[in-house]
Length: 258
Image (tube, rainbow, N blue to C red; front, side):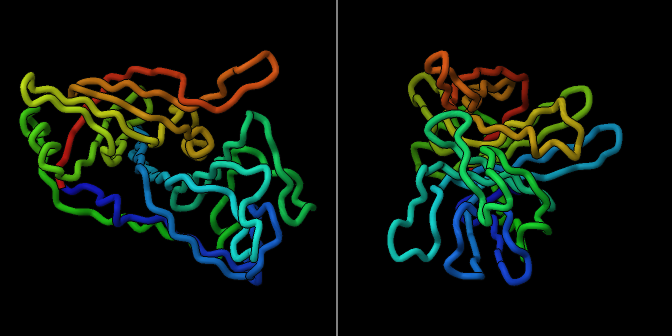
């Protein structure tokens, strides 16, 4: 079975202020050109069953908001965790500050404030963008014993989770980073993420706007439990983004050894 080699798969984009001024910057750039390479944490393929139209989304790894090329004070304040979600033609920039509702000024200020979830079209914000997925031949590990031995032998593992509703069929691919195994009782349980968690109530063109982040765990091929990142109240006035919403889904889970 072909599986994604996540350590060698990347999201790349190029900003060139001389040709396509950025609409997602929060400070004046030190250079007109910047090339970004971000490793991937997951891939999500969603197919609309009645039309057969499929859309592919990737999740980049988390980083921090920064001023590229600054001689000092690299980290922007207030600082945020930054994580990108991309399709072939759209992007979603997710920023997590110390509390829900925090906003920062875009650059130039005439663009207004930047929200925690900024959506746009790639051609309007980047000089170029590329989803560089590396596929590798792997072995489907059907038996729990094989999964246990693969973990004890330090073999890289990738998961594929498939499920559907009345309208869409979903395929999630993601690396298994953390996993528990027991060679005496022959048991395994994943505990990994973050990866994408789609909102399937949306129309195809709006799917990227509804993408959330989740961790997941499964110990069987038949179901999975997601723990989804959502606004979580601390007080009556303050909420933070936290992985706190548990969702159980009937799925087909496949473990692949690379």
